[in-house]
Image 1 (cartoon, rainbow, N blue to C red):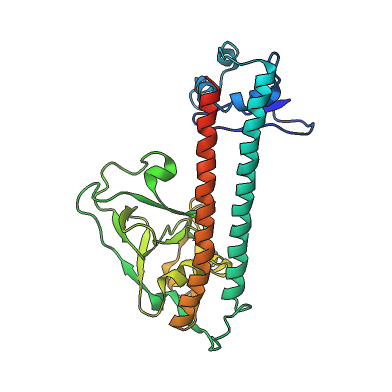
Image 2: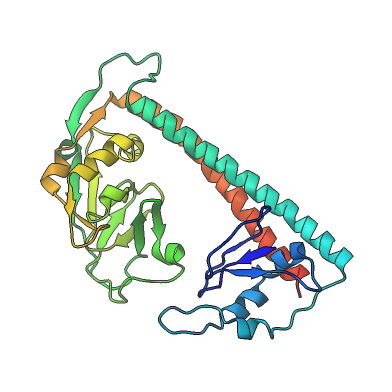
Length: 314
């Protein structure tokens, strides 16, 4: 038995359970007649099936129309060939699952290790001096440099998951076409959304030489007391997340909150000596780089699977 979520535009949700159960009436349950369910599971992941499913009905909440899909024409080989194709693709799926687990374990590792370092439960041997306590206002310098012309630089989006080109993250441009007056963000600067800071929307730009962000964002540079790469990790720690929540007041919605900037700039931050900051950031960066390497491998596996789906299902 195969569960299939009725497609919305550009949404791909499918699952082949290995157990019996019940599901929402909003979910399609498909069972092959002249086709193996293992093969059917991969057929519904192809562009030809998705394109047909995306011929939706309804305007406000479009959903796939079964009357369109049940009349769709799909070619498929004999059952022996179906099983070979499904078995081969399942091996790639297993590899993708393994890769996801590797990434998940590394992300858990860097989170746990960084928390222990910043709580000083782990210390590097040669550093014994007590850490200084500074406020964010003592290490940050607000930047309000803005563009003069529209599309002067590419638009960046700050999210809880990181900093990305907006067009890559949303798969389209969501900012105004006239983005003159947007704030300029340069390499090694801090950026965050005051409304979503409490959700972890804060990032140090260590990737892009220059870009632009929404005028509603806050942009800061660091002074000489702090190493940028150290702050990149400390500012994402659970301790800081708690502090951000405390200085964010309930806004017009549950998600969006108003940041009290005075309280924000008075948040304490622990700063070891510069040499120790460098040592800590170097250690965490190595784990981070390993995570990025594993994510690149995952991306290649997903591209490989997508290619094979289109080649095997014609």
